[in-house]
Image (cartoon, rainbow, N blue to C red; front, side, top):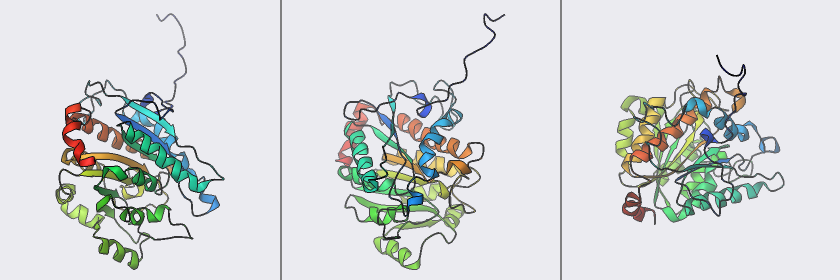
Length: 329
């Protein structure tokens, strides 16, 4: 017979998987740092604080369903998340947005990610719309050359839209203009999307590798991985609408098809094994459209796959860092 008849109310996680919260980015130590970037450069006042800005909190709220505990066996990665190693994971909270300083949102995001990188931590970014990676790319300028991997239904090569050049439809165009961004692989492109012929032409003229969802399903993810050069620095940006909507339905622009869970798992783990993944973001999640939290849970699973495979690849082993960091200088 228990001594009491009640137990405390269940506590929701405030941070991702209840990892320690760190707000002082000038004085912290970590191997992996999760950070929310809710606000980008909107196309209108109505988009300045849209539902996607709530996604970092939404992902954290459902992360317990993505990984029930650090002591649990995870079949995707073959054991416990941190593999009983002394790996420090922190949650840095969300970059502060200012309604009267929209352009400053990108600057603050860049500064925050730079501090994470300077601390030697692997940044995992929770968006926010797909403009979020632009300041992240800038923060990575001292870690090139970088092979950029995008999962998306759209190519995002617009030069400008409604007078905005740093918005969600221009993220890969802006990346292509940065000297430290080298090859670009865009995976899962489908439907009519937002691309006009001139944007496809610009992408092809740059040398971007445009991989449609049709091609992906025909040849498989391993074939795509084999095309990506080994021993490179990689950055992975995941737009939720590039993923199969049966597992990520909460998006503003859904389309049939998309990269399925097994393919995403193979992509994330394959990139980790091929070289050095410098960081990853997950963007364009619209919480009000989520069904039973499955979009947030799937995002959490992507994060777990990155963390678990990076731990097993020895990313946080000092000797591994010494042997591989020359590529990031």
